[in-house]
Amino acid sequence: MRNIKVKVYKSSAKLKKEDQLAWKIAEITSDKAPLNENAIDMVINRIIDNASVAIASFQRRPVISAREMALAHPRENGATVFGINSNQKFHCEWAAWANGTAVRELDFHDTFLAADYSHPGDNIPPILAVAQQKNSNGMDLIRGIITGYEVQVNLVKGICLHEHKIDHIAHLGPSVAAGIGSLLNLDTETIYQSIQQALHTTVSTRQSRKGEISSWKAFAPAHAGKLAIEAVDRAMRGEEAPSPIYEGEDSVIAYVLSGPKAKYTVPLPKVNEEKKAILETYTKEHSAEYQSQALIDLARSLNKKIKNISDIKKIEIYTSHHTHNVIGTGANDPQKMDPKASRETLDHSIMYIFAVALEDGKWHHVDSYTPERANTKSTVELWKKIKTFEDKKWTKKYHDTNPNKKSFGGRVIIKMKDGSKIADEISVADAHPNGKKPFKRKDYINKFETLTKFIIDEEESKRFLNDVQNLRNMTKSELHKLNIKVKSDQKNSISKKAIF
Image (cartoon, rainbow, N blue to C red; front, side):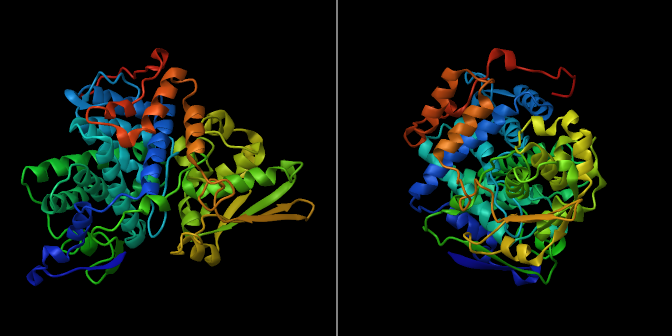
């Protein structure tokens, strides 16, 4: 690996493109690096993971909306849409839009946290859609996805967006463009222009994840993927981009992020070095914001130690800056304490999540979010007793550059009405690579079978799992096998007139 120093230059400096971050990303995107075997296996795991949560969200309103928009854009020899018969094809950018929204809706797929946040699995829908439309093979797709993960993970390590209230999809646009460039074996110049266009068009604010969180949270990464596909298409036609997009005098860094005097360090592999960043990412056992995963596991454990939840006087959660300020009381969002809040808001409230998991001793991607569950009197009472605090020890562990020491948990102190205390802590979720029960292929398969059991036929389930695990050997025109057809009684429509 190498550390790329990034800072702002005046236009008069005429910074060479070879010295720009976008070019250096394009160089590793267009190189001929060998593919790491463990990374290949993880790609297959994450395709299974994405399919699990996408199919589980098939009848949810945002997913239906996105799908109906895609169905209005059919294209012969295009890309497939989750749940729809693979004989029907659609323009790849619209298939990416529908599938990306389905993958993101339940907040239930993979994550990587460092200087910023990310869900690297968001790279898969747009890269897969382009692969299907361009008649790529299995190894082409694998290479593209590995590249997409590599770029996003390393941008997340080096450049913090959230401190400037910029949504994390600003790293997704460039990573998708890079992944598509690698998939299609494009030249460095074309990828360089694609990355810059993709970044330029995907900068948006974090209001999508603040206050009353709406369904746009699910659409946002799909939008970035769609814009990245369009950016690559323009660049392939010879169109250029705002440049230098990171280092320019009026660039993203200069006037969106830390300003003209800012300095960032972005790690990247050397040219022709194996790309293994996907192995640093982790998926979710529970359908909730990642920083709640470990605390759900801790709540499940604590449930066995408390006879009467009503005997609790108050609960204090000591955790990292990010957890406290994004999903904790440090966010100062009254919506996070509101029983009538949207599902999207509740899955970003550790107070609600911890209360339900502690009461129930479990977590369910549907049942734990129903309006009836959120308005249960005992839950609301417990919910109001929970407060989070930043502990610098946990913040330091959160930002540890050693993946074996990085932590996303916290310490919980439960104070009972009789004056006694119950205290415990957890560093990482059980399903984390360093957790009690790290996710393996069998766990991804179990997650898929559990989430799709009543939505697809058993025969279709077995067919998909067999095909996806044979991804390395898929030839051109076979990538449609990564699509899944749902049962006929699952098809749903909003039936609202719109533009498309």
